[in-house]
Image 1 (cartoon, rainbow, N blue to C red):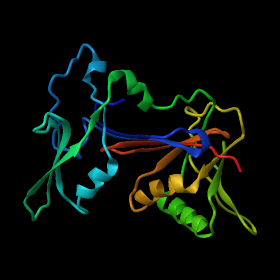
Image 2 (cartoon, helix red, strand yellow):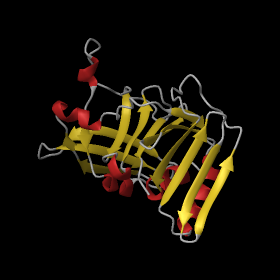
Image 3 (cartoon, rainbow, N blue to C red):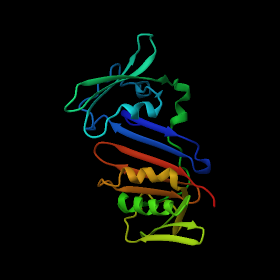
Length: 242
C-alpha cells in the first residue's frame, strides 16, 4: 500500500463481489501538502492508520465543482475518533464537519489487503471509458444483468451480453496488449461481470482522458487499473456464472 491516502471498499469476490482502492499518493498534486506526524522510517508498517467511515457521510458534505478540502484525523470533545473535514468553495466561507470513524486494529488490516492474484492473467488496454460506458448503459437499458469480456493476445476485445431474444456484442481490435504483464498461456481470456458493479466505474471516467488497463483471469476475476499523476485506481471484480 502506497504512502498517502487510500480509499478502500471491499466485498467478497465470490458471486461477483469487488475490491476497490483509490490511492492519492504523497506525491499527488490533489492536496497541497500532507502533514504526517510520527512517521517511523525504520518500520514502515507503523506508518499506517486504518479507519472506517460511512461513505454517505463523506459524500453528503462534499459540494459539486471546484472546492478546497482539508482532512484531519482528530478527536471529538467526548474523546471519540473523528475525521475533521473543512470545505471551502471559492466564493464561500469555510464549513467544518466532523465524521465519526472507527479505528481498525492492526490485526484486522489484512481484511483490506489487495486480493492475491496467483493465477495466470491476460493484460489488455481498453478503449476509452466513454465508449465502454455507452455500451454498458445500452446493455442495462435492455435489462441485461451480466456483461462478458473476451480478450485475445492479438489485441481484440469483445463485449457481449445476453438478452431475452438473443445476444448483443461490440468488438474492438488493435488494442495494446502488455506481453510483459501477461503470463497466461491462452490465446483468449474471458470473464463475466455484473453490470451494476462496473457501470459506475466507467461512467465516472467517461469524460476524462484516463485509459483503463484490464487484467483478466479467465472465469475467475477481472482487474481494472487507472493511473495518472494524481491518483491510482485499482478495481477487482469477481466472475459470475450464467
